[in-house]
Image (cartoon, rainbow, N blue to C red):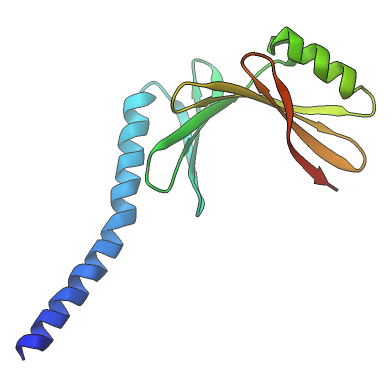
Length: 148
């Protein structure tokens, strides 16, 4: 009987901790978000197996914040104007990815949790989409290439 009681108690403890984990992480994300972005408006949440995404408006700009499965901030992103990229990057990009063959789709500034900034620019052409990564120093590299 004693073994049965200990086994039941162990099963209950394991089951309880399994259910407490996601709720505790969600609470951590919510608390971190509220502390970091207290002036946010129009807040919407989306969750996936890999991260939580919070979309909101801050200082009249649309911002997305991303949190990992442990509830820690990965970083934030916001749309930016292409002409605000580092000038050396603009020269490299406009030479290699010329219009009209490549159509500009998105230009995003991503700020990591450690406050490092990178920029991501996506271009589309008939057969593929290319995403370019640009460092703050203006170094340009291909981040992703997807065939249509």
